[in-house]
Image (cartoon, rainbow, N blue to C red):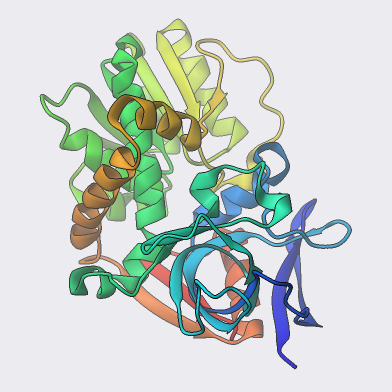
Length: 361
């Protein structure tokens, strides 16, 4: 009997993790069992955990009690099927559990993709429920397996943020400050703004002293500052802050410095998740959590189904091709090494130069 191994995390204390093994359930009619071949672990997954209750990330792959399973982006191969349209050997890319295997119920089955139609996922955004079938992927895409898992989803978020800001006339801002500019979503956004037609805004990357050289080396920011230097910026410039860090002290410093000139405050990630409490009321624009599926849904109506994601993937491939010159991929196999990798990521000890690709199977 197939055993499913999962890495679970305490929802109220992300420093506590455990490995759980259980027998795979007997498949119902229409279901498939797939091996999770490989997945990427990034700071974005920590953000999923931090916002798990607010956004619903814990609902994709439920665990018992106070424990949760963080979703990841990766590849899975069907090893058992009771769904004739999805045979054994079918390989997909999409939203997966941090586990060795996953049971899915394919629906809306097409040659290129299907959704997981299991009941508990139906209220959740389709963006995360759709799986791309990989058998017809062009060779160039097949060669970007690590990039597709670790970078494409984050650069898609970067693209949607940039589109949202542009769609709203940049809220009248003349510059954008990216907090945690070393994060992959952060440097993806910096690249997109740097290459935007007409360079409509100045790009300021804010980061820790340890990551300053990395951000400067990307060459996509007009200015790079460490967090303590934010107050040296010209406070009279209408400014947007895009917060990938989730640190209350850092975001508070930005709001207090720019005051009414902070015209939009966009909260995206939580790389500094341990500092997220105690923000209180802030001057300037009210911090607003960015929910990418909302802007994607708007553009689906504006531009037609799938167009924004097609554009985002093209830009993601472009950014990834440049980024991989400074990044290194690390393959991690086995449940205990994978759990250790998660612990390291939660603790903020993974260098931005590293891409962690994991497999529990």
